[in-house]
Image (cartoon, rainbow, N blue to C red; front, side, top):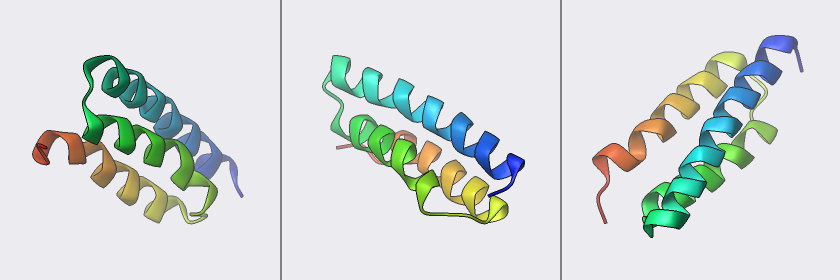
Length: 67
């Protein structure tokens, strides 16, 4: 793992924690599960470009998926 991958993972995990807290307080299940996914997925992706791409797509999920 290089430094860029670790910093991007930290950024997306921090945003995921925010999504999780928001989803828990507002009872918004999509935001809650997206937050959990954002916190976990950086452990499994080691390519920086793939990490940023997947993270960006996950950030957009609660905006476009309404349940």
